[in-house]
Length: 508
Image (tube, rainbow, N blue to C red; front, side, top):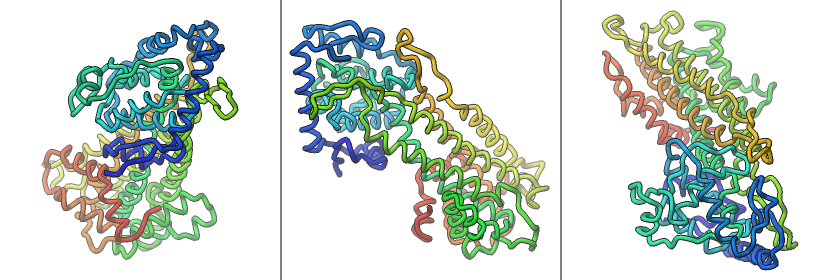
């Protein structure tokens, strides 16, 4: 199995996913090791000189004016982790927790945190050895970093808290013992270096944006199937239309759909059946394109964040400086992740309206609810209900978290980002949107069958065949959630996108 080299500068989203989901191992680069050791020497120097520096020889937050002697630095760091482990709610998934640890190692590898190399190596050993801390999903304000959830990660490093090892939940001490990993006794600056950062919100964001990029392409393919099922008008995707309003996402979406539908016998030209299609067909480049542009904007912000130093204070060992700042503040991620949630919601909004067009006989010209024996059979009637429910839920979730702030630490921390809430909401919206698109995928295949498949496009033919290889056409009512779940599994596997791209080239 390949090893990913961590240097604090060049970690990619794909690499984070490789570690989080596929259990790739990691190791530090030689340069990162040098930078870590150099920064640590400066911290040790300041402790020995009993110099007053925030987080090294002082308390935290409102207690930043209270001096801590060098004899109490270990207790200070231990108390910090225990007191800050205030997370509540369900645990984050194992893949999110592994992404969190990976991102924290990468941030520490920049050499601006002052942590000991041996402490970072403990975290690396946990990643490589399969010890995954139980991290509650709620409790972070997203400024002063993700303090509460990251503290739960560090508890396991200390032999406290809880972890998953070999698929079993157990105490942190037991997990570390079974994995033969030595626990750590934190010393000056180390507790703060481990928890004062944005890695929880960024880990959730990283996995969400990875899946969003694939879902965005799937949405173009699925919508193209619906166009064929409804004998949609191909003229709306003429490149000349989009070149005179040159938003990149709009142009690329129109190109995608044109390539996916190439050689289709089921699309029409304007005036053949109708002059114009409804907006969720005709305006696909504008709707999906805007979401595409939003996703790429967020992608850029996440790529910056995963290779950033986000704790406080930061060590600049070349100059011998330790400077307090605010890189832990999650606002750059909070705004971007709220935007991501809104953008993904719009994919679901448009998809649900296309489902309605498919099941409504007055709009489709097909049998009501896509069943030939209506009355005895309900067909796809309640599938649209379920899609509408998810879309409505997304509208609630899309309310931005970043517009809220509740001061903390006796008003020392008087503006917070709520970025971790924004990240969790964006991930939930993505899951809902994927399910809505799975429903449209199922309905469009059924509608194509009822319309009479006289020849699909180069991309939609592949998509349709994959669906029918897993799910047979609906002739009479059956348990529908099984089909929906199977379609969602197909989307999660990225099977359709990879198969279509193999045939027609990379989708934009």
